Length: 87
Image 1 (cartoon, one colour):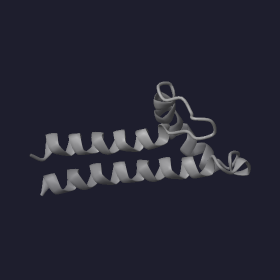
Image 2 (cartoon, rainbow, N blue to C red):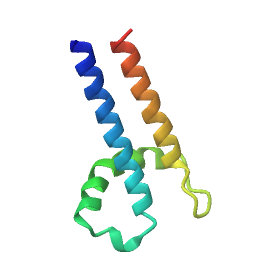
Image 3 (cartoon, rainbow, N blue to C red):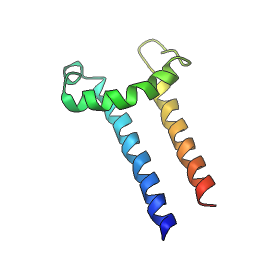
Image 4 (tube, helix red, strand yellow):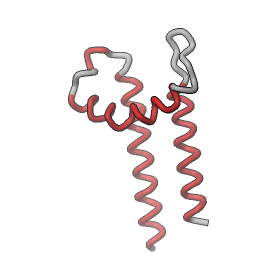
C-alpha cells in the first residue's frame, strides 16, 4: 500500500512538471503571454531546467531542440527513480 501511494506521488510530480514544460514551450510562441502571472510562475520553475540543456544544445536557426532533449531526460529520470524504488 505504501508503495502505491509513493508511486502515485512520484508519477503525479513528473506528470505535472511535464505539463508545465509543455505549457512553457507553447507559450514561448506567443509573446503577449509572457507577462501573464501563470506563465511567469511556470517559467520560474521550468526555465532553469530548460537552460541547462540550452547550454549544450544550440538552436538550429529558429528551432530549439533542447526542450525535446529535456523531455527525454525527464522521462529517463522518472523511469530510473521508479525502477530504483519499485523493483
